Image (cartoon, rainbow, N blue to C red; front, side):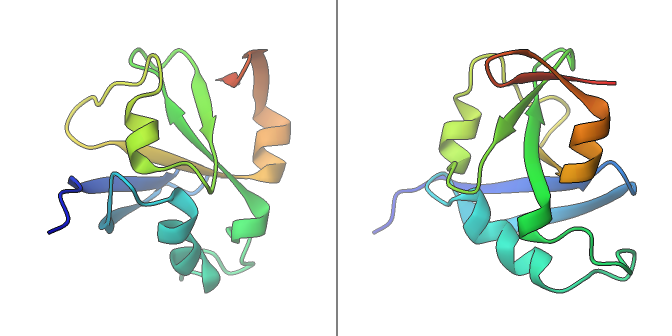
Length: 118
């Protein structure tokens, strides 16, 4: 029997105001293994297919929305839940997906793996 905690997470693309519900994951699932299939084909709203796995970065926010912490394809959902400062607010864990170009334009590093979104 698999005793892994089943999770429901949200994948948010703030650049375009879209949200997807991720249901096929548990605490041992890696972010990339869940999001890669979702990002393989462009969504209706992603006509230029900017949101490809090789063109995005993943972030979660801290409990006060003061900064964002980067998570990676190999990060497990369980490891994200245990990041210092990470807290689930209003229901479900949220992974924010940004294009690399957007990160370069709007993110400023403030500490090791902590960014302010301008």
